[in-house]
Image (cartoon, rainbow over all chains, first blue to last red; front, top):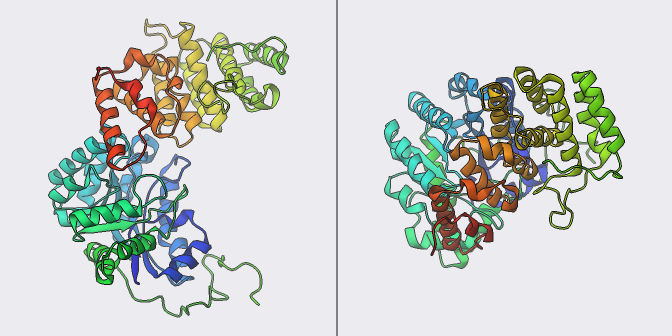
Length: 292
Length: 217
């Protein structure tokens, strides 16, 4: 089984997760820029984070054989803080970099005018940089927020096939598919969406333009939810080709639109060998202690 | 948050002395704010109904509210207080941030936020801090922004989203000051949509959503 997880916050995860991801067939990940838990209060805080997505996290992933890509944006929640908003001026230079496969996560958190502005501005940046856009739909007032989201996407002129609208559920999926965009689903333990509900949606809507992710982050989440969804699909009668379609070919097709997706195996990585000795990033290695 | 500590409660003497010290030197509030929980305790105000203290606040929330009132006694309710409370919040940890908001609640409840314009800067500053708290992930901090100050001054859109966020975070709507006064048809619509989403997902519908109905049936 080959899997690309198109939405996973590896900054919050341990190396145990990288090992487990690799072992389960997740060879490529996309980590979107988002808020961290503790609110950021300055532009510098953002640029350090963006740099870590391109630097330390890409290194950490490679040590475990995982190809790491990022999306970059000012997220909806922090768009409301005037101290953070100025990072919008820094986003375009990040969109030129290797490994940046989309503008994101953009969208709405509470549907405020400040969020409107940041959303529209960054969709324009996606146009200018010829990148696709990863759009977060709000958790509160989701249906109304998703409708408004699709209005903004339509107004931006970004072709819908270059837009992935994420965190969908039973009440929002039809809207997004009718708009011609890719439909993203974050599979969590208990909340938001689970494997069985996902399988039901795949039966109803088919596998075309359907995207599944774990959105594993600093909260209660599971980086192996993509794998578990694959197993649930097989158990429900989908074929291995269907699984490859949803868990590999779909996210690849979406992010390939960036021209920046790298799918080759990590050079020098030997499965089961663990991180290479002596390899460091800015003086840090992911090793601890002497290897036996 | 205007509940007074009972006279025999630990830390009462410390709190009285600290309030007096703030009147003498307003800058003293920074140290008092930091020490409040260690001196008066961290337990819930109403342990019988609110064991975690998230809904009705903690004893240190109440203590810090009193410190804020003392600060207002010292410097008034104009620009100076607005700046001092902004700094206390921005430089505060989660508990100190709650204390600032509960302090604004105490001032609002006591009618100290005059409507003649003299407290406008303070109210504006308070609203920025409340907005920051409402974006937080810490349910206690979110709940501290929907007391009397929030009830009186938050714009309706922000207030509605705050209420919905409490439901999302599993915090009782008892935390919202005078819910009935501001609940409107739009909040009812949001609650119904949320209930529909949960039903479509085969998940439980939070009981508190029923409190957001303004229409019958």
